[in-house]
Length: 537
Image 1 (cartoon, rainbow, N blue to C red):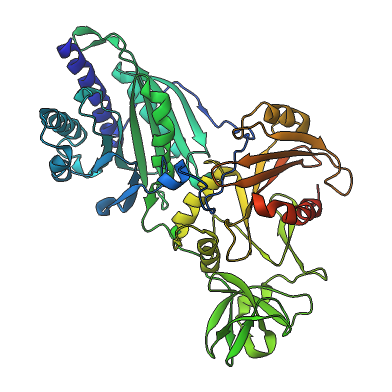
Image 2 (tube, one colour):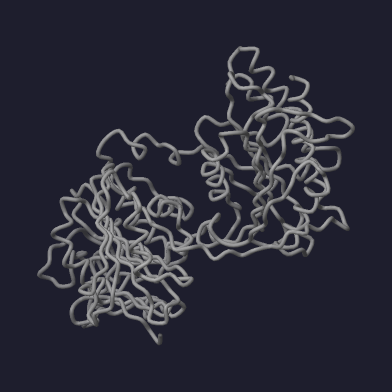
């Protein structure tokens, strides 16, 4: 039986090695069609990572997605994150250097020998430069041949489209007779902010002919996933291949897809925050909590200092700025705005700001005590405000860090997030209260259907309160209201789902507010819902 397992494992390794030939001309083509499935509007579970944990929870302990290790593979310009308890090596040398971490057991030697053979298969002569690394857990009680994990190959695109390259990979799997592609999909969902990726799902049977032998391995159920990511410049396809053994496949898949979500190209311009419009002081002056000298000063600003310009009050005589992670105000007579600052929004007479989203044909209004922005394209001011809103560690965020927080907020559905609103609450608040704005294609889904599905969904320890209401909108437009408690952070979550008049778009406003503050904030949240407008629909 041991020989059978080894032969079977070698067949799996052969599949991995086969993928290295994908850079050769005249590749095989798969008969499978490439689909672009329209993702259904999800049953959103909102989580508040900006709050102090209420107990010993996954949020406080860092499991399963918090605090991952990271490594930079310089020759490919990649930054790779991998889970707790896993190992990662981008070369033979790195693999062998892991030996001290595995203990003195003979199982460690057998494991490293098998991993070295695995890496050898991925780096044949002339192809070494395509290998970008392999990640895997070490379990001394598991057979070395049955190690779950992933590996990465960086292949020149040579003008091929993502769909064409995915067909090539699937075709090679079919031609190998070692694996059977099941489907090819291209679309959002695996990468932040609707980034495109190709997914190839395949299976390997434990009772097949390998070469001139028939090997039967009971219970050897192995499924595979390949995710192909185009580089920002379009010159490279990064292929992430997962090996999922037996019953572990379902539990490991979310973890491995999280590896895909977090992969970064170091020099990707999207990793750099946008420059915010600025106002520069012409003299020393106080910074106020609200527009007007009757409001208290929260600090002082010096001549020549520049601050991100957020908005202007209705009269136009005060600038709202980001000041040490807070929203604050400077008088216009003592600052010089940059040219871009002149486009900053004005508040209306009630002190609310309106943000227009022409692409989605809607507008959103928020009070000036909230900051609203596109988390896929944040400014440095946005990052500072988010860092201040996170109560429990004071982390200074970069763009990718913000993406990870929004992914945690949205239960990994940041592909639908179009906006993030942060409340400027008191410093002694136990939570950073927030709102996420989601947009999904309705795909024929009605509000009644969504309400029925939501009512059957377990959002928390207790069932959510789901209602189809006509009292939340000024014109009697119907809305789905979903309310539930998040026990881990003592937060209240309130989702409001709207359907556009043309029936094409589902829009969700999802608020997360600390339970002790929800009653006081609810009238304002209702106003936010009432002020949403559809434009030219």
